Image (tube, rainbow, N blue to C red; front, side, top):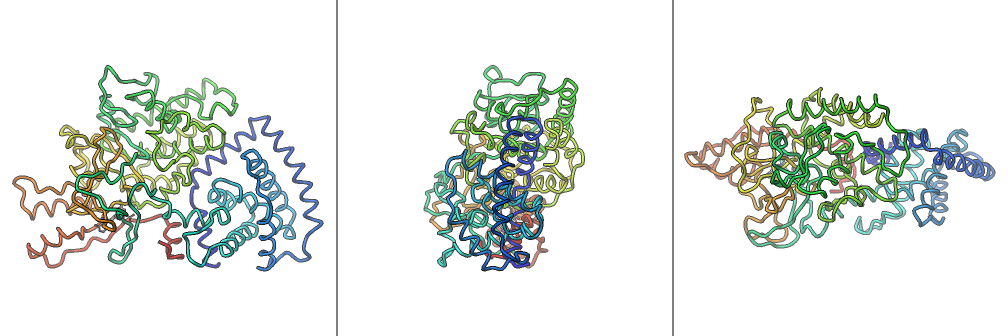
Length: 578
Ligand SMILES: C[S@@+](CC[C@H](N)C(=O)[O-])C[C@H]1O[C@@H](n2cnc3c(N)ncnc32)[C@H](O)[C@@H]1O
């Protein structure tokens, strides 16, 4: 297999989760929506016609399709007009996919016409990478390979020699989307970019300033993708579950007693944002499909099952996992993907109608250029032991909401997501942090750590961000996270004057030398915490300097155990892009 083919195949590994929701939705519509079935029948007639005309113009021996033949076919397709309006695009998409399906049943003679039909559909689909995932699973292998060859050929015909900067995503949708990621992320307004640096045997990504800043200035502000209160605070009802703001009990909006998870909000906007992102699907009996899609009402028995599954999951989160936010963060993330997929399929997105501009994070995660899956795919993680109960209870909640959704949380996927949450979460804290966080009986290696410069034991909740996930650690950091707006929005503040090109670092742990603590003890404490939580030996200048002063000649190096997802790793290794 050529390296190009391998890379496209690995690219196709992206966004499996969101596509599963898409498949569930289609299957659902096929079974329940009369109008949708009628539309499909009509499409089939059109398809039969186009098959007849394909048969008439077939090449004599298309079994093995040569590059020239592919190139010629591709040029023809590219010369075709692509529909413009969303309705026309949808109709075109359906016709092409249906044609591809029918043609692929007609034997090897029809492989190329089938691949071309699938390729045409790819040109108008808003998330081509995701569509490749569906193809990979559903299209016969020889035809799928042809679609990949067409995509590769398209890239080689359209990538300018000067490099990636002018990459035309319209004409090379799959690769453009993957390779162009770090050209668009983070958005320019953040004033930072992602750079790859050599560290020991491997490479690490880090954030670098694109413009100078002064001490105390906010470099950027970022909303989290997912956030959760510590369970004792959630139970006390003193903070908003959505933005983590402190709320006066008399001013708060409390969810109905019948809901599985007791939740408090600071405003109607936060309540509806939480509902549309995750709460509605995971903790209420509301129908998971948008109003626009008709469905049979659930039976009393189904509702009862759903309530039971939610209550068990909520009990697990609140009572069995004190000090652990990761299971809820993973559940939120999966639910948010499902909701984003559902809303993409209807004209009026739920998120647009329920989120205020202030709450919509920059990622435009519910429909922008890049989806949640694109961001998460690239984040590092560590292996975690799979807590069986968590997975079982979450899949029961998803399955009871809509049969099939449970397939979104496979063992492997769940473990990876958990590892990503644990590795990338920040602790949210106000005014220097609290002192009353309950101490858990967990063994030190089982304690959930967040990147919190005042120490995880002083946080009120955990949150995961996309841009800030790339910040590396230093015991003499150039920046610090702050939550000055009184919410989970992270403000990254410069700790000294910094110039464009300087690396941004934060303290993952409390690096202050406390009263009565010796330099040696402070150094040991922070290095121990870094090794336990993030599995690396800190190579920062302060550690070096203090180590030399103490006469530490060589220390056992901890092997960095962090990982990136295989698809991304192979892609980067093959193409040497980043
Ligand atoms: C949460 S991730 C941070 C993003 C990460 N830099 C990346 O490459 O995507 C934590 C990882 O960064 C690495 N890391 C953080 N600070 C570092 C440093 N000062 N030197 C070397 N590795 C560091 C750790 O090994 C850990 O694997």
